[in-house]
Length: 335
Image 1 (cartoon, rainbow, N blue to C red):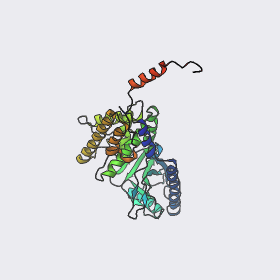
Image 2 (image 1 turned 90 degrees about the horizontal axis):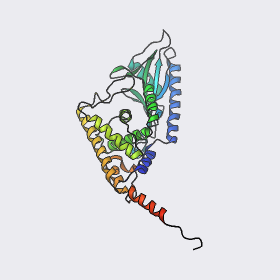
Image 3 (image 1 turned 30 degrees about the vertical axis):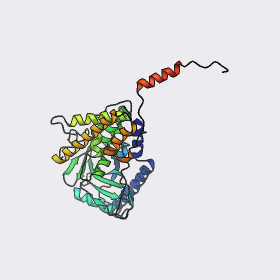
Image 4 (image 1 turned 180 degrees about the vertical axis):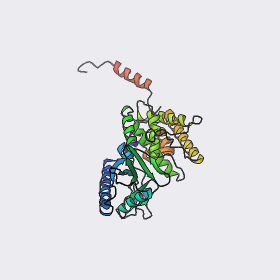
């Protein structure tokens, strides 16, 4: 079979957020924090002052470069992002826990016109969009002693600790050598499939991270490790009454798939089965180009490189050729 380890590693390198964009995100985050702090200092000096803690894929090194999109004027949009938690921490007896809508409105006002574009009010955060398409999401939290709650505009105060999650992942990946790359490849798959079919809504990067971590199987190369991990996820989710994805951190035990509609569940399982089948099909193809084209055409798009148009030499032939070369007697000196 044609092992596509080289192609998977090139794909991972292609989709992995590069250092320049990481630095751009961190610079944007720094300026945004400064502006929010100044707004609260100037406008709400007697209120709890905001603190910040970065979270999400940027802290796990699993952020990807999404497929380039274009606005109505044809300008390039690169929709990579960063999550930066805004924390209101109860420190003094006179501190007041404001309503969810109040803190959302204040953070919105603090970021208004920061980039020349309007901030966006979302259910779980305030989103600040930059000119090139990248954005920073600002989820809002209230902390009292050891309890942290997310200000969710639809579901109220929800116990949550995003720092706990990325620490969980970063600890797990120490013994899972290829986990980071597998998560990025799954996100690259999600990005391509959703871009190709805008009606398809696959699990979030957060959910894919849990699935990959819990079902991780190691192998000698990224091609095989990705394939067997996908197969393990597919098997687990297709067990009778086992379509669930359990959050490993606060609130521990929550099934993050609980609110999936029947349609979303079915569409995801069909897409996952398709990925599983094509990974298996590619693994049985001897020709590198033909094997890679299966994944390019159906699962990853043209960011996944095509292999060379040649067959992989079997291990038996490789060994036979090596032995034959070793058995050729050297020519006498001087001939």
